[in-house]
Length: 224
Image 1 (cartoon, helix red, strand yellow):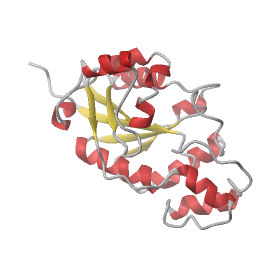
Image 2 (image 1 turned 45 degrees about the horizontal axis):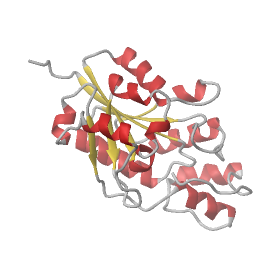
Image 3 (image 1 turned 30 degrees about the vertical axis):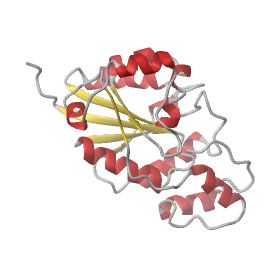
């Protein structure tokens, strides 16, 4: 019989350029559904499949810290920002698994838009060696993936979040959330156009964006 897990850790990565209420509301729902002990918000340094972020690593980290400051169970994990060059999720999960040990559940969350590109991720085949994968199905991105990815994940598919709670690693699960229709792309465009971004993200984050003059003179890019 498999021993019960000591705890469960969720990993929610992204560029967070900037972090907004859509990210935060999804993070709260994910932690509640999984009954996870902690949720790690992990800003990426230079995502290999995206353009350069508008905010610097330091700015994006500070915005995430401000947004997560008063939410119990949220941890800001800055390990990817300390790396030079591209950030690879599999390296972060391998490090976390070594730190947490075998008796702790580790589940990585991604959107269905990222899942569609999973075949282009560095060492994607190894993700399930270190963690579970939980895909959140977005209304504008149906759940689909490259054939090899789909076959590998379907072979590890779990039927319920209850099953996911008991797995330290190696499981695949997908579900929908009630997601707020907010995007970082739209926020950057509003700032560039001189429009209000109030109520789209935490006040402390909006104030810091204004203080830095961030996004005022930039082209918008991929949604996040």
